[in-house]
Amino acid sequence: MKSAATDALFALQRGLLATLLRRIPPEQSSEPLVELVHALTLALSRGDISLQLHDEAEAPEGIESKGWPKLHREALVASGWLDGDQSVLVLSHNTLSWRRWHGAMQELERELQRRCFQAPIHATPHSATSSQLAKNNDLSPEQRSAVRAIDHYGVVLLSGGPGTGKTSTVLHMLLRALEHQPKLRARLAAPTGKAARRLQDAIRSHPKTASLPCTTLHRLLEARPGGFGRHRRNPLHVDLLIVDEMSMVDLELGRALLSALPPHCQLVLVGDSAQLPPIGAGAVWQHLQEPDQIRRFNDGAITLTKVYRNRGALAQMSALLRDQGLRPFWSQLSALPKTSNISVACPKTKQIPEAVHAALIQHLDHLKERASALEINAHGQPHQQQAQDLLNILDGLMVLCPRRRGPWGVDAVHQRLLDGAEPQRWPSGLPVLCSENQPELGLANGDLGVMVGEGAHQRALFLSSDPSGESRHALLHPARLRHLEPALALTIHKAQGCEMDKVLLLWPALDDRQSSSLLYTAITRAKQQLLLFADPTAMVLSRTAGSRHPEDQSKIGNG
Image (cartoon, rainbow, N blue to C red; front, side):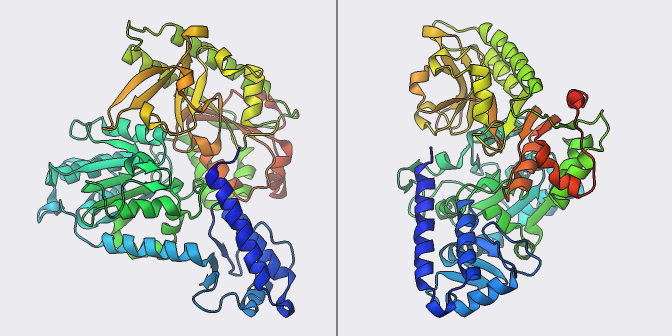
């Protein structure tokens, strides 16, 4: 079922399409022009507010006629759609954009650049020789540059792939700022509850940062129907704000965030531009990472490249996919040795592979065993350490799918394992997903939990948080949870911001223009091992590149 926001976006697309087509003068009506309109509306449905029309640009979805992009660019200029400040479209440096979002993105850029060059309130004349940084020899040169940047820039952009030390760098940034200003009002936020809690877990490793509040952006901004409670007239009380997983932030949320910041507030934005763009219109982080944008932030923009987490083939193949795209990835994947921590199989059946089914059964049995052993006191509260140990098991294994529906979709996985059982009959130990913000329960969209008990004793175990950011494990009656879903498998979009030891990835044949970003996001969720099950037809790109592909499922488990 589509959300209200998605419905509104589709309605807007239809309106824009109708308006533009009506404005085509009869003598200028042409197939390339109609295709451009179609491509723009399709792009908007993916959250993209622009199309690239330079000569090297790949033809986007919706463009089928020959002559791309020269013919389309000529038809656009001749149409008159670009004339005047009131035109719906704007063409700037071969980038075609909807004027509405183009203007909003420019406004956001200007505000960030204005803030970038204002001195942080914690900066001191002795910042350059901070003892905290001088004593630390564990940081790479890139990380040390990022830590130094917090002394001089009001906005810091910290980019890097998975495992490049972004979170540890953030911790040192915080320590650096607090060393100069112990009473600094610092806060941390992320787009999802899972990402926020992962960030909070990291900063708890140091006593000086352990108590800093970390929450979702929507909770930080006090989201409510029709808008946010925090804005220019009611700003946040914060001196330093760090936002993680910026690749998931759309233009509307980015503008709302800037509007809610007091003028003096320092902003640190952290993300990976190679991951999936946000669902809403306007990929803020991806736009800020474009070369012409990065240059405007001087040394306030830092990219981390050294990988600390993913070793071996996982690190090698994710970097290859990020830098060179799908064809080289598929080509080299089949040539990896069997001992690699990433492997591929091409099952010939359309059913959920038996290897996936067996792994999930084993995972469920382990969870059920630990759920049965969970101690619960007379007040219905779980033993906190046992509860955390149970939730930690969730990070051991996850099945990821690009889509919800289809033979290899999330729904098919749950049908195979649960046989259509109603929620009241879900087994103890079943991973579950909260798919709606419920601040009254301390839960956010994307939070993962575990079912505990069955029948009248059935409860859902979650790590909830109060408004101050304090976390506590709670057993909640399923009736109190408005949108609870099984989570033996997740869509790749839902998994963004998560990390799991072992990932089983079901990869059907896709015609999605975001396939590269989807695949990159999926494989970078794995910390130790990735088993990729690919539809044979999905390997066409690899065959085109002249490589062989494994047809034998026996590789599974050898990585």
